[in-house]
Length: 101
Image 1 (spheres, rainbow, N blue to C red):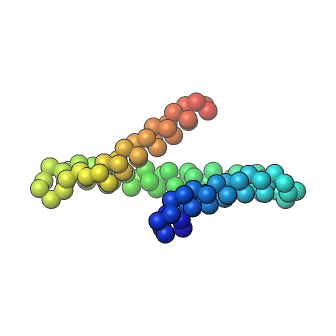
Image 2 (tube, one colour; image 1 turned 135 degrees about the vertical axis):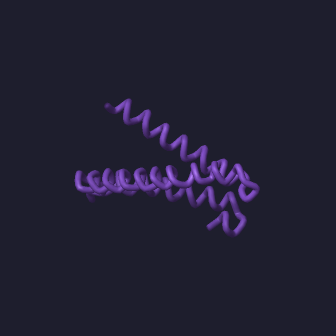
Image 3 (cartoon, rainbow, N blue to C red; image 1 turned 180 degrees about the vertical axis):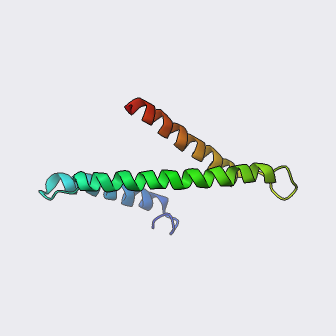
């Protein structure tokens, strides 16, 4: 909200308060915030998310490469950043799978 109102320091302050609350509230209460059921849900959701974005990337990026050979498309900052970010996410995932195996 602070950034939207063009007060970046307010945004950083709100973020810091939110992070402090996220750390303090669970540590100061007896409520169980996360258990094995939540872990199962998290694993399924993250697996489906990675698979969905993986398939999307497998379709979109070859299409963009093919389009870049025509005068109708040029790689810009947004598409370049998207391709690098996707590559980094999946490389990190692959490395972590190897590490945890």
